[in-house]
Picture 1: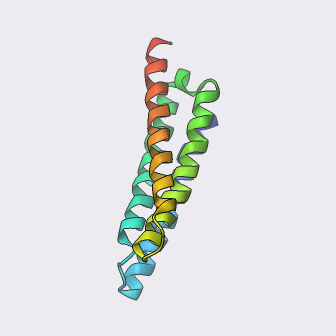
Picture 2: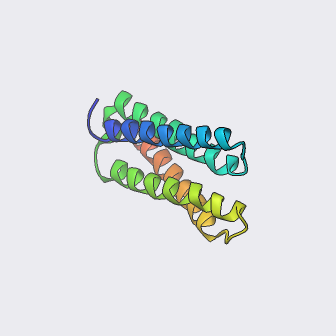
Length: 122
């Protein structure tokens, strides 16, 4: 595995480990109030990034061009703003970062859909 596929899988595993550490911290403190943010970090970060990486590995034509790099950047910005944004909102703060993260997650999904459709005809 190499290129964008490797980047997604490696980052997905890093995000998964962060999510696991956060889960262990919540269990040790018996404070699960941040469970929604933790869940989004695991789902978008670990699961999403892994799926993206394996798709790019299995369909090499999808990994060609600028679109996959845009997808990676949007995905990183999305998970980097969504999980903390949910934590901030859940703590009584502003929902702005969570909203931004949600919109970036949607943009990432749309770019991935375009990538999938584009690679079907390639």
